[in-house]
Every structure is written in structure tokens, then in C-alpha cells.
Image (cartoon, rainbow, N blue to C red; front, side):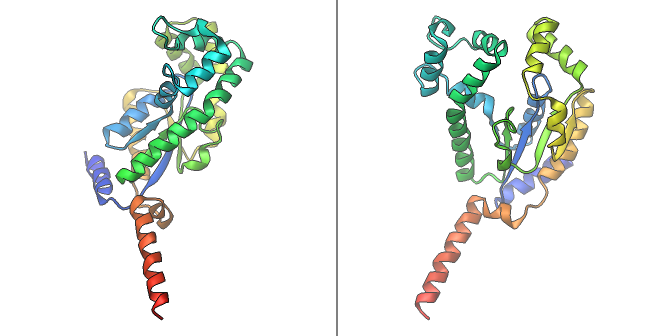
Length: 244
């Protein structure tokens, strides 16, 4: 409870902004960490939600995907059958790369717009929940970067149980992604989600303390109020200079 009150005090100060990167792999438990951030009032920009929005029926992303993969991937209501499309791209690396290329501009714009809206609202801490944070070369946007890691066997078993798929299918999906061990080497902070939920929450509290610590002047400058302060200082400087 103390950590939550401390975090809330930081948010109410309304002075600074930090963009935190959150990434992991399939069935690593990244959503669990994302939800924990939300429970502390920290806004999360979820790339998966953005990705779903950009392929809604009639959207630009929808048109690109249907043109590339055909109308067989559509449901009766005209929406894309995400499960069917997932089977196609997970079984064929070239088609997975094609899908990523088609949707990358739409997803990047969607993430950017969500960040802008939160900046306008005066959010001081923003979590960027992006599965392909490193692969899409968006890691430069965030500091610190948190990687949710899980040991390979636990990841395999959780994926099989979650999606009701065979071991072969689960291994294929895991192998289609960048290894978690590699992502771990690129992280500023790692949450090992191989154990119990209580153990994960204990690690999260330590991460939360780092994320909500006092921010630098550079981060303040990236905030809405920081930008306004900079603008005011420039205007005052111009007025003073003209009157000299």
C-alpha cells in the first residue's frame, strides 16, 4: 500500500514524464505485468490493442492485409479472422515478415498517437507495452526497458495450456519469435515470471519503485509542462532581448 501511495503522489505532481518499455515473449506473462502497472494508475500503451484497431474492417491496415492474403481470411462479418491469419504467418516466416511490413506503419502511427494523447493529458509515466520493441527498433523511445522473462519449459507448458495447442505448435510459435534470453541481455530490468504470482508481484514492486523515482530534467523537458515552461522561457527571453 505504501508503494502505491508513493506512486500516486508522483503522478499528482504533474511535472514529469517517463516512457517505460515493456516487452517479453509469447506466454511470458507480459500481460500480467502490464495489468499490474494499470492497477497503480500508470497508463499503458498496448501495441496489441493498437494492432487490432488498425485491421478493423474497412481500415487502411485491413485493406492491405486482405489484398495480400486474400478474402479467405475474413469472417462472415467481414472482420479478419485473427486465429486463421495467425496460423498462416506462424507457419511461414516470409508471410510473417510480409504482415509485419504491411502493418508496421499503421501500428507505429497508432502508438505515436496514443503517446501524444497521454502527453496532452499530462501523464508523467507511460508504459509502452510492445512485444516487438527491439525487433521494430522502437527501444530508443523508452528508458528503462523491462523484459518479462520465463524459462523455456515453463513458457512451453503455459502456451500449450493457454491456447490448447500441441507441443509441436507451441514450439513453432516460440521459435518464430526472438529468443527471450537475447531480449534479457538488452533489458535495463528483468522480471523472472517463472515462479508464483506472489514472486512476480514482489519483483514488480522493485521495478515500480524505479519507474516512479524522481525524474531527470531531460524527462521533465519531454513532459507537457516541461514543454510549456520551455516555450514560456523562450517568449520571455525574446521580450527581454527586444527591450534591451
